[in-house]
Image (tube, rainbow, N blue to C red; front, side, top):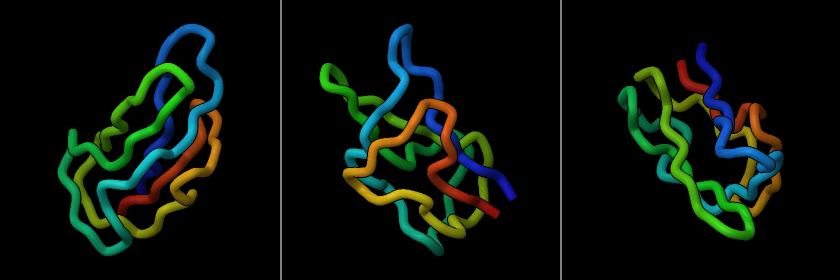
Length: 76
């Protein structure tokens, strides 16, 4: 099992909002695939998975605020 976490995005960025998902539970994803967009008040960033597999579950909803380093998605 692999958890996708919000990566370090820049100095001073501690929290982001999940703007949209590019996958759903049950989808197959490949390493390096963009799985979500997260946003700050100034920019939008893509979140990629490091591993391939099947999305088991999304841990947060679109519009939720999450901390950098927090898990947002589980892949098996």
